[in-house]
Length: 272
Ligand code: NAD
Image (cartoon, rainbow, N blue to C red; front, side, top):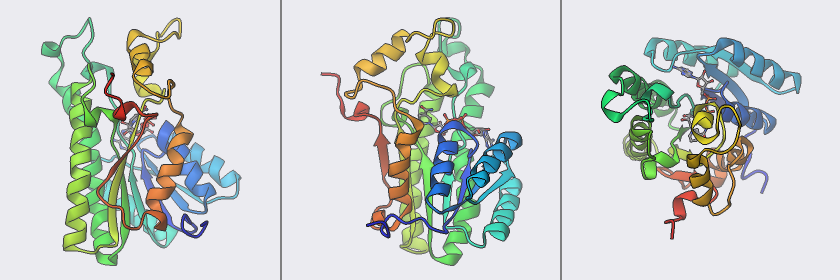
């Protein structure tokens, strides 16, 4: 059973790897024996995380990259391959929403700045698409590989307020299916492409929507989410790790083109 889920010596590149969710995933994969490359815009946090992973006796390589710059992605790819000797997995974790692209009492849909919405679309969708081109080309040559994208609950049914973010994550789910088919049909059946759709996990990107900045109490939106979550709680970053190990290992060898919700039942519940 442990062989089935083994990630020993796999080379894993994680964009947005210094972030809350993907940082936790990086720590978990390193502890499972993988060599992890933490590829993030935030060089300082990437180095700090790599240091703390190395201090535990595991392998971690920090690399600064902007997922919107194909040349930088190419350079990061070469550097990761040089240091790790092989790359088996790409996790596209860089993404997120921003306040300026979110409707509120102060900011109506009609006044949402195009730049803000465009940057959310770009970071999430193009920030997934471009690394898939660079690493996908290598996987095509090797005739094996595993890509994991990060979608969201907002991809299944759009969430109120976050129209741009919902559209971007829906694009990621759709692209995950497209690329899974394309890689199988055009290059090799051993190249898999899947996504996870984390449910509601309190992090920087959503804290301002789910809790009151001053009191820390749940906002009306936070309460609505818990009412709609059969498990009646938010998730934790650690709760993503089991599904990630499954999708990256031989245990899911016949699985490609799926988006796995990890959401305490939110997506399954109609509300009635
Ligand atoms: P986070 O902000 O903690 O992490 C995102 C990381 O991406 C950061 O380290 C940031 O420096 C990096 N980044 C930003 N722009 C970049 C760029 N251009 N190039 C390279 N790196 C860049 O966010 P998180 O909450 O850990 O979310 C991680 C992913 O999970 C995102 O795609 C997010 O949309 C998705 N997600 C989060 C939740 C949640 O509840 N937090 C739910 C569903 C999906």
